[in-house]
Length: 113
Length: 114
Image 1 (tube, rainbow over the protein chains, first blue to last red):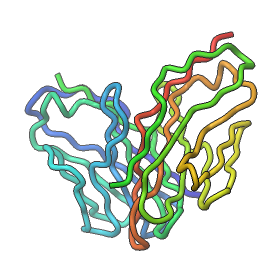
Image 2: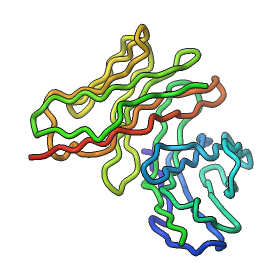
Image 3: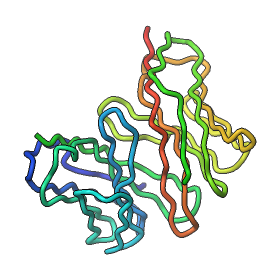
C-alpha cells in the first residue's frame, strides 16, 4: 500500500531563517505531488505541484520554493522566512488522470517568530 | 475559475443529532467531488468521494450525493457522535487529463457535545 510521510511535524523558526520541509511517498511510482498551506482560520491553498522529477509549477507568487530531486521526494524551501509564512503545510500525492483521490501527509506546523 | 462554497461554522450539535453541511460548487467540465475531514492537530483524511452525477459517496455513516442540477454535494449523517468533532472540507478536482488539483472550500468546523 502507498504511504506518505512529511517532516518535521512541528518547527519554530525565527524571521529570516531558512526552511526545509521534506515529503516522501512510498509504494507508488511517478505520482503527482503537491504542497498545500493552511493558514490559521483559513482554507487550504495550493502552493506547488509537480508531475515529474524536476517539474515544478507554482500556483501563487510567494517567498517559498519547491523541488523534486527524486521521483517520490518533494521538498518545500525558503531562504528567508517571513512572519506570514506561518501555517500548517500539507504534502499530498495522487496518481494522474481524472477523479483520482489526492492523499495527504500528516502535516507540518510552522511558526515563524 | 472553479470554486467551492461551504456553509460557515462552527456547527454545534448534540450527540445523536442529524448533521447537514452544505456544499455548492462552480466548475467547468465534470469535476469529481470530495469530502475530507481534519481531526484536531492532524492532516486531511478522505471521507468520501463521488466522480459523476447522481453518485452517492458514503463512509462511516456519512453520505453525500453529487447533484449536477443544483451543483451541490451536501454532507449528511443521521446520528453524530462526539468523535465526529472535526473540520470538514468540501473539494473538487479541477484540471485537464494531464493534471488535476483539488480546490477546497474554507472548511466547516463541527462540534458535537455529549
